Image (tube, rainbow over all chains, first blue to last red; front, side, top):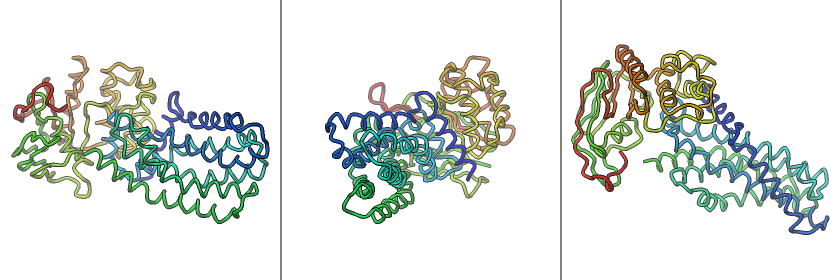
Length: 223
Length: 211
């Protein structure tokens, strides 16, 4: 089973890295969102530093969801999903591997550049590192929850908005714990460790549970 | 190995496509489903592949792998080519070989592509190929992993005469090796096959769902 899973991961990775694959779209969207914030909020350095973790988290949330609506739709449109359903891999593993490839190709670069973008928000070194750590712990949950939405809207031509409506409420706990852990570093009220561990727990729970939900949704929608 | 259908019935969108359909396909046999548009040819293939639930009846593959579902022992080539335009023909086949349980090693798919006369385009992105060439790459998928049952929906669409006879040879080899083929086509398949007449579709243009 490792070899089929590896073949699928490699294919998703290659598609994402090719021109038009969309791996860099998330990072570019992230950059745009973070860049316009100081223009909207004004040049108040203290305010920016205080809001920095929240801005970075909201930008990461939206950037992650941006590319996810096509997660299964491309394969559904060109018939690949039919073949994948009858492949050597269970559909749950297909979902998990596609999510892993999506996360590695489009969300991981975003996390890597997030400290750089945090500088634009006048954040210090320690908060920057901790925001990156919370993103690393929390974004897998966003990808997995997004996959459920992508699976539910796989047969809809313009499912992107519906997917966001379905998924964003479920992403709120991730956002709450992510921002509270991140802002602990920059003088927030709560300690860092407790919300961070909650964030890790949500991610692990999503990784374990979401593939079953998404696979069930795909099976149901296709009938 | 023998695929048997016992009084199967199929519905799409509340419309009964056919009912009480029974047939047998043995090893080395080809069956061609014929009928007007909307008669349910494609739906029959999709039901055998496990994509659509049967309303009645049963499908049994005797002598197959008891662990695997019917769809997992079948190759299904439908209207869509299931190819990624951004990847090269070789990368597409390497991927299918990997996930369909074939030989995933680099270059193991080359004979399959060569068999369909496309070895020279292995390194071109699929979106740069013509419709007929894309179709042949999709058909090469049948050869990268061995599965006994081939479900072919209009397999020769966009193929020129030379490619059609090439593919007929591929199908003949599959049958001689004890494989099964069920096809839905309006054009002659190119191999000896029994025909399965599906009833006239109730709807004409406008009311018939895409078959």
